[in-house]
Amino acid sequence: MSTLAVIVIAAVAGGILATLAAAATLALHAGWISRLVSFAVGALLGTVFIEMLPHALETGSPTQVMITVLIGLLAFFLLEKLVLWRHAHGHEEHRDDLEETEHGHALHAHARTQGDHGRSGLMILIGNSVHNFCDGIVIAAAFLSDLRLGTVTTVAIVAHAVPQQVGDFAILIHSGFTRRRAFAFNVTAGAATLAGALAGYFALAGMQQALPTVLAVAAASLLYVAVADLIPSLHRRSELAETLRQMLAIGLGVAIIGGVHVLLER
Image 1 (cartoon, helix red, strand yellow):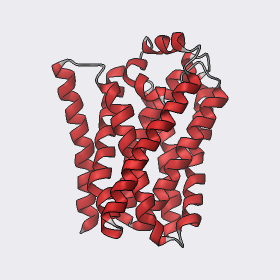
Image 2: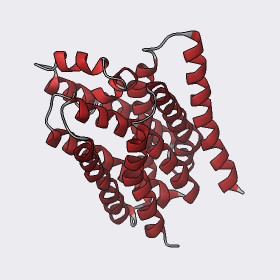
Image 3: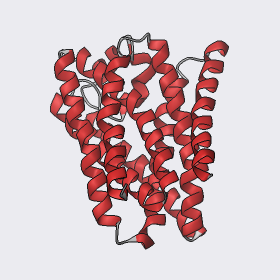
């Protein structure tokens, strides 16, 4: 199977199939949504530290790679600040309402990066499409570097896309959307993953020398999502039993990434 075909399959899994899985989780108890968020944290951290950064360091200058990661983290911080500034005025009441929904308490911090639920469905579609487009580029860059890296990166992206999509469903439904319309919005946004993957493939296929830098930026992106967006939402529940369940789910996410790494390395 060609690299392009593998990238297309992975992008569909990372976008549209993740949306389908997210729709199915809406019937779950909110506690299970927290498990999904915890699992996503483990998968993202495992991908960054077990696969993505080691591969970037092997193929590029260690100093350049680490500086790129640092710059990337700061850039994503500033980008999130711009999003928060854009939506800060007039939406505090809506943000408080979201915390009272069944799924909102587990996903509020992550939903924050998508803008709050008072904005229009079009803004959610645009914001998620850009996010998914970037995920597609990350998938393409990973597969162009190494099949194993691409596989674990796709697993991590699907893992964090599911709770992201659940949060979007909760926001849209809380805003008055029907389940069918909310689902259609998220499927449309999920298709942007495939567009990003195709764009990334054709842009990077002949630029192998740029892949270490692209991987470093991708690592910064996944690391920022895990540490700045997902982990704070887990701190909303501080009970010992809940913390243990979160740690188990995080460990499972890391273990699956590590297992895929070992299996594909043989």
